Image (cartoon, rainbow, N blue to C red; front, side, top):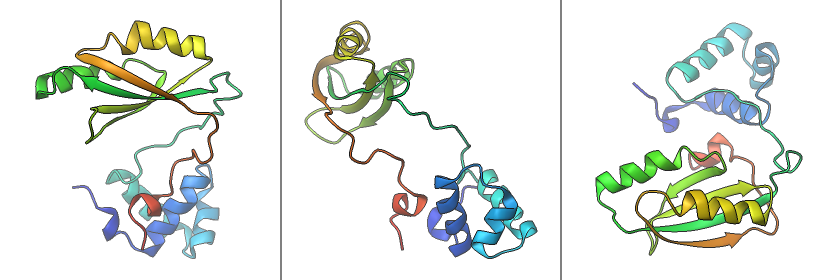
Length: 163
């Protein structure tokens, strides 16, 4: 059974807010910061992991230092939006690592992609050779980002709608 974030208490929310910024914090320091002892903090952390509220831990890389500073947002319109076609597209999109995000949208297009490449040339090739050849793609429109103003993942409280 998964627990909804609205059922989390203030200690759980504090844990999530701290981990969102400092994922490598020690349990001892986490306990000190939320105002509980180590054992109940560990139990809460374990419960948050077991119920899927915390899905995992990962390193965040600086894409600019890795030479992937070209960001484009791509509207994708499909020629077929029946479930089978959507499933085929959804499965295929996961095979392209340059696509950081893919969202089905309620609009005059079907999907919005966030794509990160090393250059405009790299993006153009990705669009021509991979994105445009995905199952059921009828058309695409590209918007190139000039600067990222806010790009980090939102805090758990912001994702849950806050209190």
